Structures are given as C-alpha cells and as structure tokens.
Image (cartoon, rainbow, N blue to C red):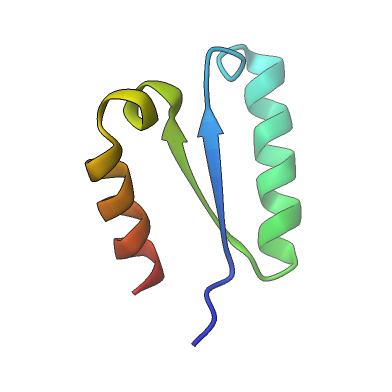
Length: 61
C-alpha cells in the first residue's frame, strides 16, 4: 500500500498571516493532487522525535 503523505516541518517562519495563507494555498494544491498533508513543529522534531515518528505512523496506517 502506498501512502501519499506530505510532512511539513514548520518553524518560526509559519506564524504571520501571510505565511499561514501561503501554507494553506500550498496545502490546498497538494490535497487537490491527492496528497494528504500533516504538519509538525521544528521544536517537536528536535525535542520529541519519538512522538513525531508515532504521529507519522498513525497517519500512514
């Protein structure tokens, strides 16, 4: 089974209204092409990688 999953790792550059609007536009585009998009925070990748991996696994099962 293939998973069409995009994992976006968001940092500090994803907080303004313009940046959030750009993220939403990109997400809408990818979802329109049949991909599913999930987001995790940089801090979680650096400090809680096990939880991030679990989250990814939950989204591909």
